[in-house]
Length: 182
Image 1 (cartoon, rainbow, N blue to C red):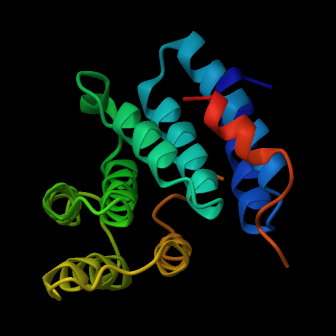
Image 2 (cartoon, rainbow, N blue to C red):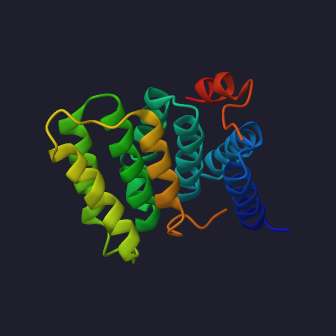
């Protein structure tokens, strides 16, 4: 099996684990993909892995960890070689993380940056609607949703199929592993 096929296979497994609430396994798979992508100097796949790790952090309510992971995924110059659909998802999740951290102006900037790549990402109307809903939430003076609402929004956005690679969600031990990967 080629290395590219291996990376894709691990991304699929990680995404399946994330949506099956197996956060420890998802974090392990995303970390494996990140290491493999970094070794191959593949910024697109590394961005997908970092965004996946941020997804895990969001499900755990670790908004600052998610922010750090997403900022790393979006850092230039590597982000210039990342697929638009991955940029869209990372920017959207960064907007949610910044909103949860009470950084409204930075959240708006990230969400507007996500909206700017909607066309290039060939996004669905649902993805555009989710971004608009998050921007509208920022417009409501002083009404910033709590982390559980934002985590639910992140999962709903993911169901649009923008990131196709790939009960209690707070599994023991995962929080420490996600934090150590930043």
